[in-house]
Image 1 (cartoon, rainbow, N blue to C red):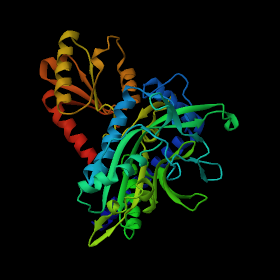
Image 2: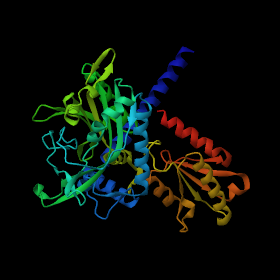
Image 3: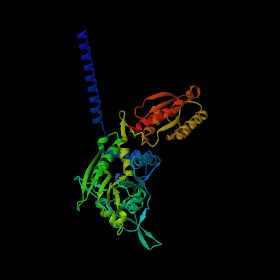
Image 4: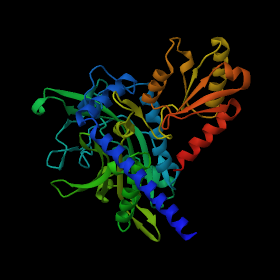
Length: 446
């Protein structure tokens, strides 16, 4: 009996070792056959253009990062999901965070902090030389130029007193906002100032006000919290990192970076500021600036979080890009379920087209009524082979494909394909909504 147990154990060890060796061999072959950085760069841009995440005839990484292109239907849906997740984390899951909406145009104001849009230089130092200057527009009524906002900090500081009264002057509290910001960037060789573009970006901002004693603690908390948030939706969490940048005046800015195939790019910045910032915006209103933390009344310091959501969209598209199969390899966008622009695509299999479309319409109404985004593939009148159909939906980042066929009309069974595993399973039509709801709910909790 003991000898038999030893033989079985050794046999299991050999099988385990052989399995590990096979996995290592497959990984080595996959790495050996992996495309170059420039190929991944081009593949990502082609995929964004082909599947209409980003609109534009000539997409370059400089123009995309600079916010000089519009978003297509899938890009808009995915960005809406990113904004929703950001808002849930900052505003809904924290006490005393007040949302505001401020104007796009402000009278000329003195610059309060260094501009947060930084870029990585070859010597691993950050600089903001790609920024030419603020965007101004003429105001015919007042006879002067109005500055289009470059960030959301000015609005939060301007409305600080009103928000402080709303929370009964109790510290700490935060002011959050999501909105469009403008900037001009150099887009020519050798930083030629004649080649400039006006870029737009959707920024998400949180100003967290607290006493001077607790500002450092809150800064460390938000830095850790934001880094975990970015990593939560990524297939490769190690692609995100934080670094410290110090300008010529000694002011420190902590930057959350993402490691793109071509190098690191900043996606969010965190700054600490003292009480002089509020005094600069509200001169002569010292008593109105005081808030209560415990028994003390103080003018608060603040931690400012400034997030570029358009760059965040590109981050998660790059992170989700995966290559599947042998040559020629197929591109798949394995987007996190919480961020996927469409959760399920409903399409037709074999059977009477008119009857099947009625079933598809019923499924679409049922799932959209439950808050599940659906791509109506059955509306396409062009007959497409199934494998090409799956390839299309994989490139769109759609999590599941539902195929309705004549079998569905007879027995209520339909085919469900998983984007990540490519496994096809049969499911009754009455259980589809509950299955998708449970799957998405479980993925959101990860």
